[in-house]
Image (cartoon, rainbow, N blue to C red; front, side, top):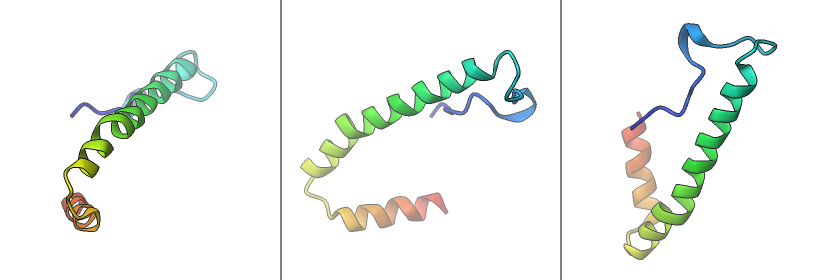
Length: 65
């Protein structure tokens, strides 16, 4: 999965730098796209699967650890 954080590492721009606004716009658009994808694709498929959502949430949380 591609990272959605365009401002990481040594290239993190200063808030008053030339590239700051552009990088924030890219980050914002990436987050909006990710949320739309979850809302319109992933969540409906999860509901249709008839799986126990609490169990699914616990599985996802355990993978994050």
